[in-house]
Length: 146
Image 1: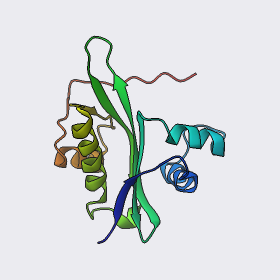
Image 2: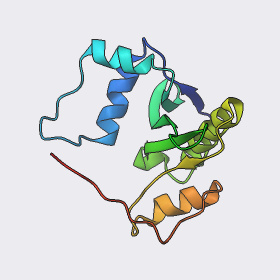
Image 3: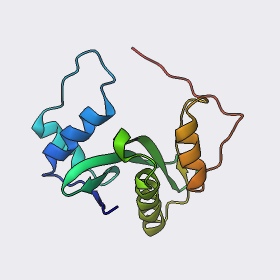
Image 4: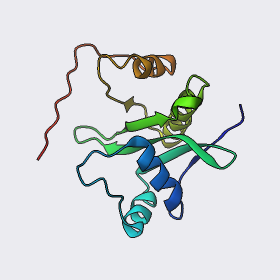
């Protein structure tokens, strides 16, 4: 399967919108961000929107944030969200997206990526394990909603 992996840039608003729709909405408004907001976030140097394209069509993507640590002079990467269209799963696309992010980390001197998932999300756990991630079975994530 031939597909391209690349980081979205400031003017890739339409692809960003398609990825947001692929991810689904986390709020009740189900409204897309404005073009101005999308453009501003895409140009941030510490935020990554990485997509997989087949024949210029979006088939998957992820978002990740660089996070400067407080207690030591280091930066970690938070892989926030990843999705591949169902008909394109199990073809190495998710793995390639994660490997692309890992390469960015190596180039920037970032030595750790962290990501959370539900305990029963076995496909995600398999993906993260297959790309070198190690589960911390003792961790529990808490969410605050307002």
